[in-house]
Length: 121
Image (cartoon, rainbow, N blue to C red; front, side, top):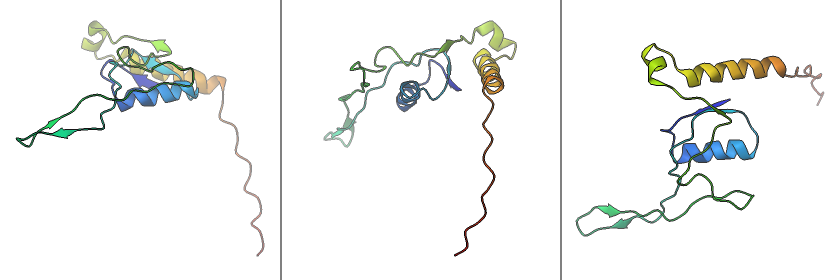
């Protein structure tokens, strides 16, 4: 189970998209902010500063661009509304924990096999 909100950006968005592409878990929250574009060519200025421009983006096996100007979509959309937050609740975290507990109940961890006898060398 993974949590995401509107402040999750850049590599955090790439991480979520890779989680989704590989079906590694459920993402709970709201879409990330949508700024996944890499910068690999900073240029120095005369006064010692730098100028950077976005110049690469990411796409998946389906041939579509990921995230940029949209964000990584969660599997379960859960808003952290101000009223709940003022009462000390984090609905995204609460739903995330509920989801994880249900998944653990429905899919218990498989038992590991016993350690075999050590080889004689």
